[in-house]
Image 1 (cartoon, rainbow, N blue to C red):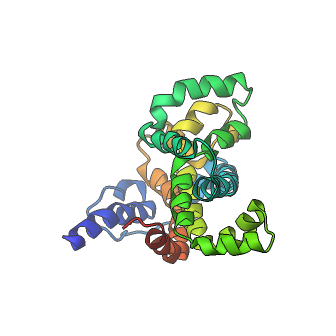
Image 2 (cartoon, rainbow, N blue to C red):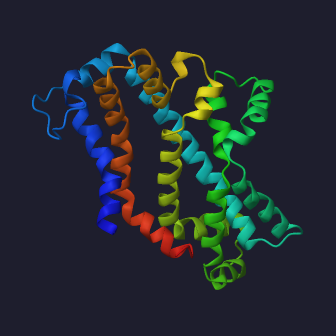
Length: 258
């Protein structure tokens, strides 16, 4: 059963890579290995569209969201796990309840709000709404709860304040889970499509997913070019997974999610 699931998961990826090296008349052929492999598809993708710019846009948006989200989420997770203040549990439940609300449900009021703030067709409109995510706060809170309280008590005795405890104790101990969250946040924003499509109509601000979608509309029969573009876009996600796969496993173990 596991082998079948693994095959079903990997097969589309293998077919995509294979099709990206095939000429147009062989894209849907029965051969998995291209009979006449070619790099023309990749050359065409990078010459027909300013694909490098779209990739840089995606890297900038995904990287900025990841860094800022880790900063705010780690502070929020520390406060909800370690600080005692009225309404703490109610606040956590309110944040956690946003898991039940998907983006398509709030996309219209969110767009109206962003438009009122003057962030349509801007990097701010792409980045700021994507920063806040209950998943990161929840995971970090669970991790900080599992850290022995004696460490915090010893730091308080030594004269450390809450920010000192957060900066000097909690952050160094949470490196594995922060690395895992960095992968999750980066991949989620690298693959984002609905929100960037809603908030931008300036082609200079397009991210790679919108570029591939527009390429599909313009060249609907040229699946070899579409597969080449998709292969290029998939490479950073595969590289990130292989680099940080150990941190992903460790974060699942240490956060209490079995």
